[in-house]
Each structure stands twice: as C-alpha cells, then as structure tokens.
Amino acid sequence: MTILPVQAHDTEGVFTERPGAEFIDDFLAHVRDTGDPTTWRWHSHTAPDKAAKPVLLKTFDVPEGFAKDPARWARCPLCAPAFPKYKFGALVWFPVSGGGDGRVRAIGNECGAKYFGKAAYRMAQNVYRREQDEEAQRAYLARALPVAPALKAALEASAERAQAADALRAQLLKFIPRDLVRTLQHATIAGGMLTVQVQVRVPFIGRDGTPGERMEYQPRPLASVKGAAFLYGGGGSPEPLRMKALQLLADIPPASQLSAMNSDQVHALEKRIQQAFDGAAKMHAALEHTRQFAADDNLNALQRWTMHADSGAPVRMITLDGRPRISIYRRVNSRIPGSGFRDVPDIVSFDESVRQPLAAIPVVPK
Image (cartoon, rainbow, N blue to C red; front, side):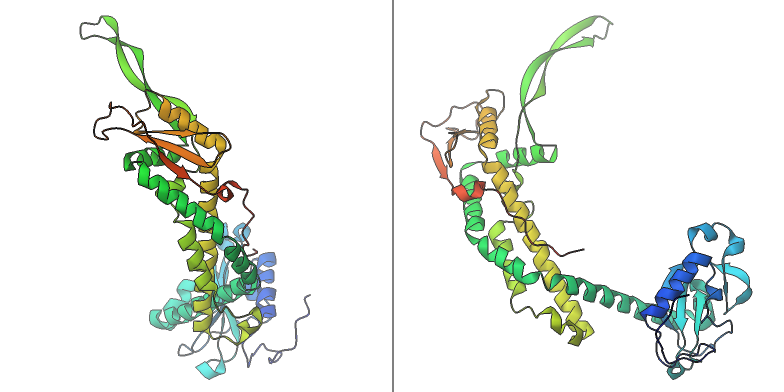
C-alpha cells in the first residue's frame, strides 16, 4: 500500500483542503489495477447535495480490459451506487466552502451533467480544463526557460549566415522568372525530380480496330534538385525569422521566477517562448534548404537540366565546381519559348558560409 503524506482529512475521507497530486496518482493507480474507482479507500459512496459546487480533480477512463464488459463499468454515487453505469468519469472533490461535504467521489461525466445541471457541471469542466492547460504550460516553461539563453546565443551567431542566405535568394529571384520558381516548387513537392519532355512511340488502336503507333511527348526524369523550398519561401526567410525569434526572447525571465507568475503571465510567456522556438526551427530549416540548394552537386544538376534542349527551362544556369557563383543566361525574348539565350549572363555570387554544415539548433527537452 502506498504511504501518502499527511493531509487535512479525517478517517472517513473528509478533506478540508484540496487533495494533492499524491492522492490523485494513488487513485489512478487503483483504477488501473482494479478497474473499480468506487473501491478506492477515500471514495465516498454517498450522494452529495445537488447544490454543491463540484471541483474536478482528474478525468479518467475505466481501463480497456474492464470497459469491454458493460457489467464491469463503474458505479456512480450520484445515480447508480449499486449498478454499473459509466466508463468515462472524473474524480471530484466537494469542498465545504462550495456547499459540499468535503468528500471525494468518482462520478460519470454524463451523470454529473444530469445531477448538477448542465450549466453548473460545464462550468466545473471549464475550470478543470483551464487548470490542466496552465499545468501543461508551466511544465513546458520549466523545460524551455533553461534552454532559452542557448537558443538566443545560437540565433545571434546565425546572423551572418541568415543574411547571406537571404541575399542569395534575392539575387536569384531578380534574374530567374517566376515560371521557373513554380517549376522547381512543383518538382520539390513531387519528390525533387526535374524532367524533360521526350518524344516516344505509343501504340494505339484506331477506330476501325487497326493497330498503329503515334508520337507523344512524355516526361523523363533527368536530375534531382534539393533545397528549392528556400526560393519560394515555403517556411519564411531566414533573417526575418531570426530577428523575430530574438525579439520574442528579449527580457525572458529565469525559470526561478515561474512559481511567482499568475495564470495570465504564464499563458503569455508560454505562447511567446513557443513562438520563438518555432521560429528558430523554421529559420534552421530555411538555412538547411539554402545549403542544399547551393551545394555543388545540386547546382550541377540544375545546370544539366537547364542546358537540356527538351527541359523547357527559361534560363540556363551555369556553375563551376567549387565556386560560389552562378551564371544565369536569360532568353533574348522571355515571351518566346524557342528564342535564343543572351550572350552575357547575370552573375549571382554568394557567401561560401551558406554551404557549410549546420549546427543543431537548441530545442525544448521532452
């Protein structure tokens, strides 16, 4: 038997103060082992006053192994103390200050709404949900706040790289048409494969039943492209994401001050910290997409595809291994697909830092 801490209750289970977490854990363990909440040692089998204000301590389900058999469902002291009645319930305290008798009962959720009235029981459920939300928020902050300084340092160290990634994106979008960006976007969504249109002979049956062949254009995989998401901004641009996350982390209190915060302060801080970590993760993903796009093998794949006569690419992108530079040859007339390409390219130079391996970004422990 679990030894529980001394708390203000008598031998009949009358609690003059709210039962603590140890009692709730003991109750849940009892239900898990026996499937019967009514046999818990502090459970009251008597019905409370209908005017009493219930305080939900914990919702629970009758374990699946017992719930399969309706004959083993839990009995409810509100309406069916001697017969199986429910499998989804709540452990409820009825404080004397709320017109109750100080006892604890396990009741069915539907039974509670019928017994106390929908409005009164819904109010108790809403209070419980807010308490659960605040408990989860405090738990998240207890894990996140100690990591926040490391995240802030990582964001500050990423400034040069994030700015270089944004500069590369801005240059590319200046010289390559939107049609190509959309093509790369669709290729990325479809798995990253760029195709060319080739003519193939396709057998068919004519109207008169005579077999024959005809020429059709069909796509053929040519090159795989990575990191194109940074071009169309799928998750946002690195530098704005970095700056926003840093703003959210400004003047963050230490974890030691968490216990002194009220519910509203906890809610606001949890939202702020979560947005900072989410923004940092998006920045990291955008930098990783940039690294993949600027890699030699990826630029060579783009060169091979844009140089292919059947790619339909509106530009030719030329790169030399190891050099952080892309030469972009645009068509003489962008409105004419078959027109030639310009003799003089637009040069896109970028910082070598965007190609370097990325360090992991600090995350909130589970």
